[in-house]
Length: 262
Image 1: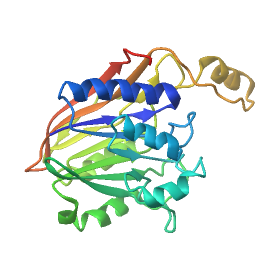
Image 2: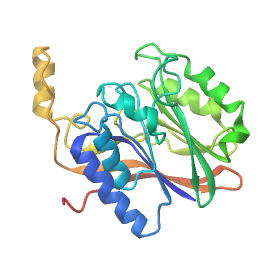
Image 3: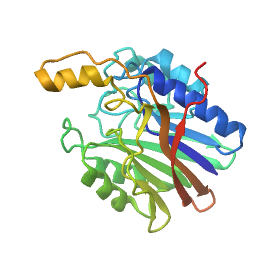
């Protein structure tokens, strides 16, 4: 089984990159399932129902969110009825939506769990205790379990990877938009990377126009950020998985340029 996991999709350039790269990889038989973080898909902040459907039409199977989950209010009702869009499982009780989803594939069940960190971020429930509670019913999740830890601190993401080694198929970090070079397979066959990177315009500051971000740093004033448009890429990882054992057998970093702008 081959699973593509795409880093944070930023604005329309990121959405186009996902559609372009996924189409090419699926046509070539290189990808079976696609998971993507979509919390920046709507103009860099949040996700709307319309754009979620656009990403599903582009080939995404599961969309994860993060600290910008509720930036677009219309998503609240959508996540209640759309299980393949998941928000962090350690959000406060009473939040709409779900923190995990199990989908069927030609290789059996695949479960994706979404968590959000607490270091340098808004207070939430403990992600470590939350995922431990979820994994108490490990058999119901199927053999293949993927975990998106959406966090600022590299230490928190690294610790989560080691906390879950041998217990899940893969752990991948999102949120910082900068791809790390520590892709590896931990003990027990758990694939790991601290951050997937970003799906969007690389000639930018985290997907935003450099001029507007620079003005903000120079003046200290709040300035609306424009989306950057140049050097658009999809970053993430490609996992090769043994579906019978639920382990990662190969992990490769992905950095694919967009070749069509239709």
